[in-house]
Length: 318
Image (cartoon, rainbow, N blue to C red; front, side, top):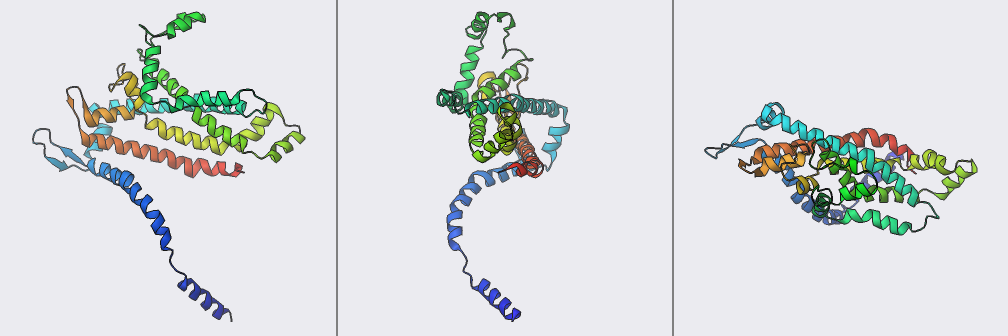
């Protein structure tokens, strides 16, 4: 009897029609994604294994030679490591400043009786809608020691002696640009965390209040724990966005990422290598090698989050 039932189940599975409509709906998305993502990525990887002779202009296969030059040739390794460190510092500033401030603003906006919170929410999110070019030029004008307004504003509040040409000094340029980027994109973590706070069930808050957990203690012991997955997603988005940063540096400091390459990121060194700069001709093959390394750095960061961090955060999800 059991064998007969098993035979019937097997026959039913065999007779189950294939869902062709799934392929029909998925095909356009797969084709478009392959054309704009997979094929360019594969072509970039392929391009990094070749090199063009500067005299004969003959392109030849060199294998991993471009990567060996990037990591071991003194001409390449110093600027590459400098840009990699600057990218890590850029990301660290965002993590230490942007995310805590985003959590604080979202917590304030989630207060029930806060007046004018729609206006504050819109005003804080507004810089995110501006282009990098507009933000870069506006802040460059504001911080200019010749015609900028920052010096006068600092004098008006009694801290004029602290004024420096923030974008003109190696010690302060990268930190200043990092804070400008934080100012522009603080609205994204604010909105995501704000939505996460609003999604916390009222039953959880009521139970915490019945146990005497209110105010700041309630936020740190209940709410912050429940929004940790959202903070994790914001962190990985920040990581990916910072390692793709280019526009703000190019707009404010130019392709040379001055002063003295102190604001050089992986994006700017990739641009100079691929397209060339001033009298230096471009080297698309080395540029492809740098782009591939950038891809694997981002891929490793995302993998660490997905396989190590996210697994520990899912237990807090509602």
